Amino acid sequence: MPRYLVDGMNVIGSKPDGWWRDRHKAQRSLVEQMGEFARRAGCEVTVVFDGRPHEIEAPARISVMFATRGGPDAADDDVARLVEADPEPHELTVVTSDADLAGRVRRAGADTLGAGGFRKLMATD
Image 1 (cartoon, rainbow, N blue to C red):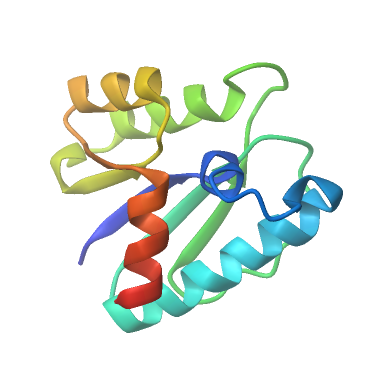
Image 2: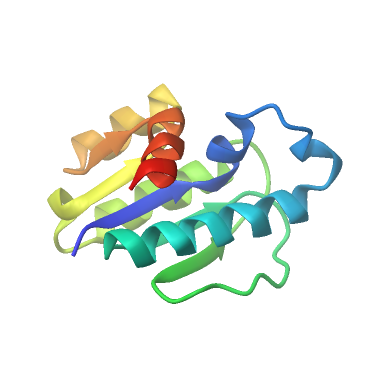
């Protein structure tokens, strides 16, 4: 089963649709979209968001996490740690357009997909 590990705010920020006016709504919306994608594609998705944790109802096959600390690159660091701790990182696709994070996770064995490419994949799969 394909597994995706998503830099959530990076994907949200890739589409300037006013998401910054209601960050929580944008996060919930992305989780819903990923739920539909996971159902259709038969995959699992873990998303890591920056910011303070809040309740987000996650559909089947979706795991929602929040960065374990605040500050710059907090979610990036958690995504990188998850890849490094994964027993089969070569089976993970990390979704991010952040070049530094992409390099880190590739060195740990994961594949990468840009935020725009992931949005297209979710829309067409």
